[in-house]
Figure 1: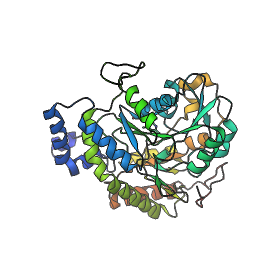
Figure 2: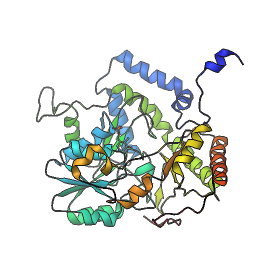
Figure 3: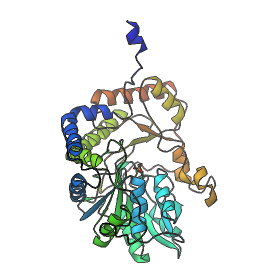
Figure 4: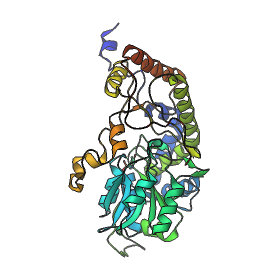
Length: 397
Ligand SMILES: *Cc1c(COP(=O)(O)O)cnc(C)c1O
């Protein structure tokens, strides 16, 4: 072996995501799209932004889409567009990425966390109902890992209490709930185009989708200095626009999203097949749900040892998320303690995200599953026990 080969950094056998592989498959189209924007010097709210907004709205079966600079901004600005702010409470899941809560906080409102349903990892609707107070203004369900939340009962609850529903669809581009796309199931929805998401930019980006014209108009001003016409500022808006270069890249990628999501669904089936008979709890789809598998999250009692073992074998497994939001220092002031959300907390110690992306090969998936099964037969130290009843049969949404 030459020294050069020895010095080369070791590539994992199975990376967690492989954005390079995705780029190589569409490189010419992407490069042309970038080059076109630069040649036309059409950088700020350029034509590509408008076209991408139209195409993405249509992809979500929604009327309007407004491009912003991140998913976190999309959440914040969507809430602001509904005049939700100081003094208001917004109910969301304790087991999301922290940005779900940050969007609420940055709008000036208070996030009120509730626990999740143990099968789908999405909002427990009964817990949402118990958390409603006279200050509650909105519910913010998260379609976590690409699985849609229980939107019908959530909408019913919201209608009864006159609450706004903002979907956090940042992990769920293209997922379906009873045949309908996420993004069109609430009053507005927030998407992220962070590079690793199912539809990812080459930098930051986000989108708010809505069927409400007034809300879309307000968002267009909010992201652009509160500007209606040129130099006419109706309120103190922000600079939170979707970059035109990113929009051009995302337009190319949107054409492939269905194909990539189908590949993720196929990969999830392969994991399911090869992990059958193992002791890990596999994720499932509730009846009426079509998940897009942003993450493939299993559960096991020996999570930390299994993760270490996988990484030693060159399989980059990861944890989403190791510390629930209510136990993060950032939300210390809300006064939560361990024990407040038992499902979320129990899962935080057991969940493990396996590599998941469209370009993953059948052989890689088999290798991951085989490595897990080998680990388990070597460490068979008893039953998987849990204080939470694990429903293995898919419930209906
Ligand atoms: C990624 C993500 C966000 C935030 O998106 P950014 O573009 O990173 O700001 C919000 N909510 C969830 C559930 C996410 O996964």
